[in-house]
Image (cartoon, rainbow, N blue to C red; front, side, top):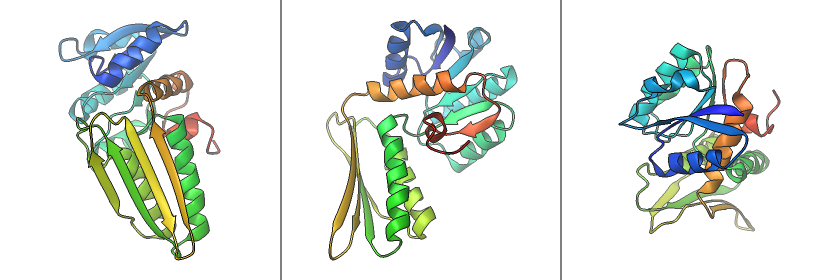
Length: 226
């Protein structure tokens, strides 16, 4: 049984993670971090931290993880370039998994996008669209940005992103590679938010005992060579 501390425990994702962990024989939730219950009160009891708090709180949690030498899984989206730099630096001291989307399916989609972009190069036009619920703050989503980054790194062309906020949509992401002769569309649709919580717990179990480094879900899922 692994002792777990969840940051952002009163949010939608944090609540789901706690519920899944508490109904599993693999986990013991020893800390539920919120504004009323800071990480300082529970970090020493946990073997691993999952952070789904707001970006401004993530900075503080990362520094505490460094101080206590605790592995941490970060699913917060909307991180700045400075914050990403801090993650890379911290990865020299502690193991970190960072992903804007913890879904297994989405991370498989990233691999498909890289393969398609490499195959078609600049010969096809690329467009990305994403739809989420009206409460999602970052727009476009971190997942859509990652999709665009993969294409840009491969082809040198930054694709446009159409971003919509509607109702209670969990998360739809589509990328289309198009030529005058054909269109190739890759779609991922999240049906239940539980998929992100399941991925976060998978990452947390994987990172315990790992060497320092900044890892992604591709590492967790063995989609890249170690």
